[in-house]
Length: 353
Image (cartoon, rainbow, N blue to C red; front, top):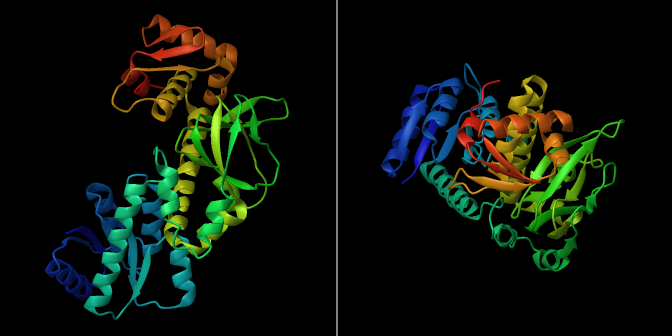
């Protein structure tokens, strides 16, 4: 039994489809337009969303766009239900991340079979959760075994050791690999014409990185450096793109990771542009805790250079040091050399601008 959100503006279609789903044992919530449907998705977190395309207030494409932008809903399977059967419309929906596309009229079996398939795949993907898992790489590989050339792809995957501070890839270079961290931590950064650096991303064991440039095309717009000794698996660009093109579940997962990464960078840029120095530094410490700390405890210690922390916060090193001293005097952190220990995580997280 699954919780299903049905977004459909046609009353008769909405009631008939809802009845089919309920008779099959599902819990169904309905919405008569896209705006209401998105609000219900945020509030109730359904297991699956079925959505019409042509609707008042907000059409189906708009709903899918908002669903994919929100981290609390972007993993929910999404099925378009529409009378539009044009190939271009189907392609547009799939490119936006829809999981399936059912055209009206449809029979009960067609609808229920599509739902069953999507729920099973969603359950498998949720169990795999390629990102931030110790066994993420093995789960990732298990989801591409359906590809005919899997054996060759698997044999092409190599592991490489990188020493602390070693460059993994450089800005303006052509991308050749998708990277997966088996051990260690990695940062990505950009430099301006005055050689001032800004850390654009932090990655931990179980994370993929480098996929943004592979998906967008072009050259790297940042540089990746090992923050400590690392063991990293390398998947060739050709093999990664083959996985994306031939396995829709893998494609959807990386599209959602891409969306999440872009959204996080946008939020950080807004913080740097409008937050006070105290807020920038506090949020940088919170970011480090969220990325590398234990979710079960608020205490967190992490060795990091003042330059790196300043590059995360987007402020001068001297300014960062003064702010850290203030935080130490206020009992928010403890400092011993390069080791910073967070003592009052909630106060840092909720610090006013």
